[in-house]
Image 1 (cartoon, rainbow over the protein chains, first blue to last red):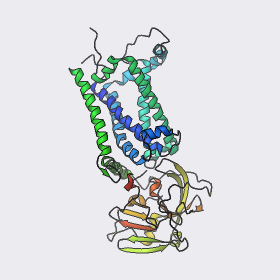
Image 2: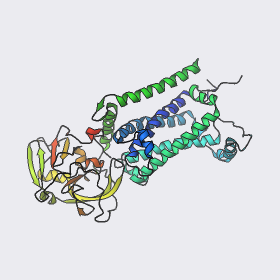
Image 3: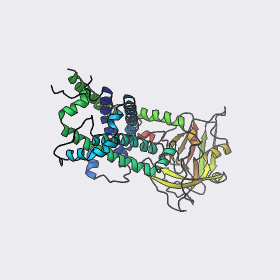
Image 4: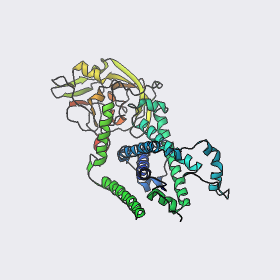
Amino acid sequence: MNNQKHSVLKRCFHWINVPSLAIMAWSGILIYWAHQAYVILPKILVDKLNLHHRLAEGMGWHFLVMWIFALNGLGYCLYLILSGDWRNIFPRKKDFQELLPFVLHDLKILKTGPDLREIYNPAQKMAYTSAILMGAGLILTGAAIFKPVQLGWLTSLLGGYEAARLEHFILLVAIFLFFIVHILQVMRSGWNNFRAMVVGHEIEKE
Amino acid sequence: MKKNKAFLVLGLFFILVIGGFFIIQKGARKDGTPTALRNSFILNEKLWASIQSAKRLSVKKSTPAAGKVPRVNGLVGLKSEIDLTNYSINIVNPDKSMHLPISSFYLLPKIGYTTDFRCIEGWSEETHYAGARFSDFLEAHNLGKKLDGKYYAYVGLITPDKKYYVSIDMESMLHPQTVLAYEMNLQPLSLDNGAPLRLIIPIKYGIKSLKRIGTITFSDSRPPDYWAERGYDWYSGL
């Protein structure tokens, strides 16, 4: 189909991320709860989420689903390179110059938005590219905590074991914020746009 | 029609994922964890054990101030009374068993390292530890090997009261940083940290560094392990 917005492969990579990231975040919190180094989770939340004494279970899920998340991410990166789709996603110089009017229009400060001649506007490109980088960062910092002896070079590169753990945590917060903004933007864009991520293309206006 | 199919496929995918999640969670368990997660631990173990090398060390750190109290975490196996002066350690080699007085460990070459001591809970602490390298101990008493000269596959360690016990693969026990320690942070071991003799194995989580060694066993079948029976990864290698 030549009016396709999202290829089958891209949609697969996208939707596999949803449950794998959800399980990674949840099991990661089970692990984090055993030693809360940065943020003390409120007791109500801990009781509601039933986080007590579930470290072993958290590790079990984390070290299983990490492979799905990592392989899916790797597959997506290969896809971006081989299909040439990276050109649609990675921001170029002009995207940084054109960013402001798009953001102002999104925030409803500018009434008329600039024309979009590509699949993604500059803000989207930057958000999606940073999401890829956050995913890669989560995998690297995670590996550095997971195997600080066998992958000691990586742990040292990231500033040591404690630093890698903090970086892993910060990236979790960052990708969570991305997720929130992503959901809000998808809701604002409406059904047709969401539908395209499922079926591949938007309904053509005839 | 094609459009509805895509929604159907996505819906089916989520049903399968959610169903699969609950089947794993509520289904059969092995040693305190769902079987799928146990198998995943074992697969990870196979992968990481295959790249483990005696040359890859836990990164050296700067030695903390002498006498800085190492964090105490968990007192299972340390609650009974012991006689530190006449302390001896039980060695159970299938063809040769013996009691070694604690003083015999002080005669072996003294080795010290400073590196991160990493707890499975998530905290870590730069710790200096010193004692006899486990491989030196084996060599000095000609232990750990079968009649054909090959090493036993596993080492088991047990506290005198038998309440805490670990088992570790021989390759990790032969790692140069694996030490039968009688000093931490340049001070003699405290009772809470496992006096008179404990294991420190920095290439594994702290759950494997058993305090107050009462018995050391060698075997080709895996001896029991306290935390592996309670849902944790048996290998716990770093």
